[in-house]
Amino acid sequence: MKCAVLVNGVPASGKSTVAQALVAELLASGKAAVPLGLDTIKEGLFAHLGTGDRDYNRKLGRASYQAIFNSVAEFPDDLLPVIDAWHGFQPATVLRGHLKHAKIERVAEIWVRIVPRIAAERYRTRATKRHAGHPPASYAEELLALAERARPIALGPVIEVDGAGPAPFDLANRVLAALE
Image (cartoon, rainbow, N blue to C red; front, side, top):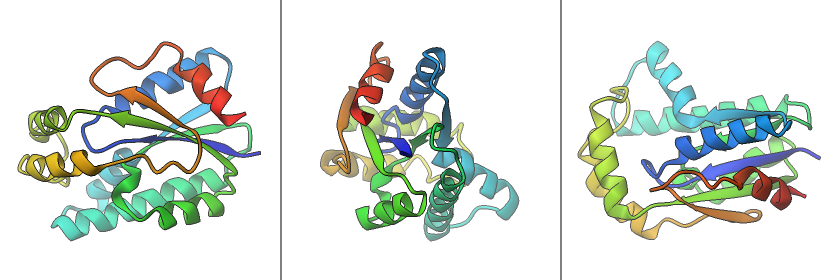
């Protein structure tokens, strides 16, 4: 049975940090895992296709999201993809369609919760260091409102972690148990 881990949370919540720690822990335990980050794919598209306005950014985000699941569709069942994205940027029906296309039968979601003020501060701080294709520092104001209302997708078991701290030491065990 093909499984996947959805590392979910608003921008600047700590998803990438959690995903990296989880993949390292899974690999150390002998589980074949691969990180797949939406921003990694999107930044490759920026490099070759250029940047644009907010609608263009969203278009490349949707293309990156589909590329991730198209890749996962080709993975062997024993390779566990750890997909780092704000999965709430599109309707849940889109995610369900991608999961079906990729033949993913079971998901565990890691919800990286963050205090909205901290997410906004992080976003402002890192905006100058990120690829120019991402929204500017002023997006932090919109992020405050988004972080207030954001919730897990909950298409499978949800494991909540605090994005303001380090990833829990037992996260890999908790994820593997949730996928059983």
